[in-house]
Image (cartoon, rainbow over all chains, first blue to last red; front, side):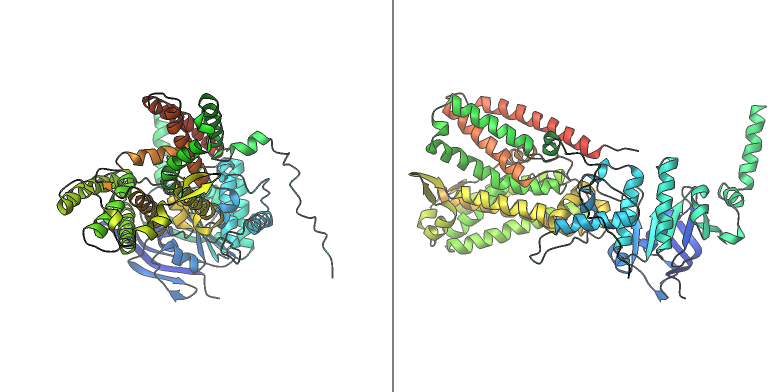
Length: 256
Length: 349
């Protein structure tokens, strides 16, 4: 089986700044690939290449075995790669169903919006994902942060995305809300989507992930299958391993 | 074969019957409608001519010229942009039509077409500059406002030696074009200007596009969150440029009505009107930050404008009071709009 996405030794420079270099990973259907790293590790650059916002200038990027270079987010979408951004998932002042269909609106044969169909499909698609909203006419801004991410995820799933890229979906959420979002990530995975989960929280990544790519300063720090690494080791590597131990030692020194 | 019992997707049981007030408060035009009703009742009681057919013809005409522009400006504002050149554009289009038909002897119809092409080109340029530079449209269109103002005066003086163009009555096609843009129709023995029909027509079309079409959905989206819209595949640049062109089209319509009704045009006309359009749109429920508003609301905002401006005349008051009224209306509208937005954007975590 060919992977949905395969990147090999991919790299990107902005002028003289090397944002990403020599990173490789795969995304398979029905699996979650987690990209972990601290701020400035190159996570955003990597997903922007996958989502068609930027183009890579080193290495190879294959979608279903075919070498590719997207010129726009629309082109990535057409190849079944949907991205849900942390703050940019939805338009707050618009109703849930209008958000759900934004960019792919259902129309009647006269070219007008089919509002009834829009509302019904939205309600159904959300409840299929286990999201139970009271009223799809309410502005998305009245939903909680977790619910908004869920609407965006359900939208991507409904419109036939093969790969779902989630940019820090749990970053601004409380513990319970984050749990809810992770449930939908698992839900999307079980429906056969390939998921790319970007996060800096190993506790969120480990339960749902199949594969972990650790980035640091634009380079791959390590790439592991779930069987190869435990949560503790993942956390230690994320935090900078030895560096953190040194820091902890130093801090204890201050206390004493 | 198993038959799964599917409960009919009836109304959600957690939805209580929404209170009437709550239902109304989400409509952006509701505040304007109440205001219009108040102004209407007030001047109907205070003055005698206001409620007469003749009075109505006057304030409806006033409102229509403002309303056509206010509706277009409302669409643009919902799309998240301003157009300060809109007022001067109404004079520019009239001038192009007048100069071409009186000085160069082109027929009125051909002049109108060229003028339309000119308007759409300026609108497209405004939009392209805003999208290309990423600068606020406020600044970009302030530039085109000043540039057009200079062009209006400069070119008019160059072509005619004065700052006005007149003599439209003797041009070819004046009668037929005038019928379309500047004729009157009779209702109950009172003649009303055809501009009122243009206003209603434009409002209906704009409102339908806004609420019932894909493009309307995009207008709300690009004004509410341009980046998010782009991420789900909405053509942000193209849509915004189209909105600037819509405003320019409306300015051409108003300019054409003006030149064919009065048969002459001053080169310094239209200055300052751009703010009236924005004020009418805001009174009609448009947010200054974009993403929320209504075309019908802007039309009602223009109606309030027209009623108050003419009502004050009928009441025999000094027109200075109109500015005071306008200021108070605007502040009240902005406060109401802000409250509505907070309700809509309230975040629960």
